Length: 174
Image (spheres, rainbow, N blue to C red):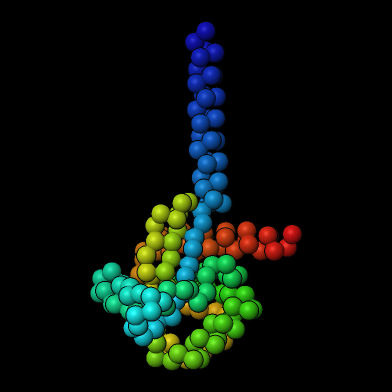
């Protein structure tokens, strides 16, 4: 009787381990992220702008247009890249959004893009990640920026963005 109990406990332990491993894999596929790219604007009383604080260690106030210029809906790919002194996130947009990015960057030199990100299974975590200065026209639809987040948070953000991108692309192919 004791031998049967030991086998059963071993079997139960193996099933629990398999279930835990399976849950971790599913979590990676369920991870979602959102990304909003806003343009800096002048202050006005129309209600179309808002002031945001970017960067946690040295907060910078920027007035932005409330409506996002680009979102994760037009993303093709996201990557975390190693950079001097840390890492950067590279975002690649689809063809039509690449033109939007090019137009906004060409028309607004000296202003900032404000980038807001959310990540996690329920998009619980989120904040203003960066405010890169527009110094030149950005062609090709690729935007790189150094985010105000840990490497682990960046990996989660990028994983979620790529998962959302796959879902959107599958939806467009049907």
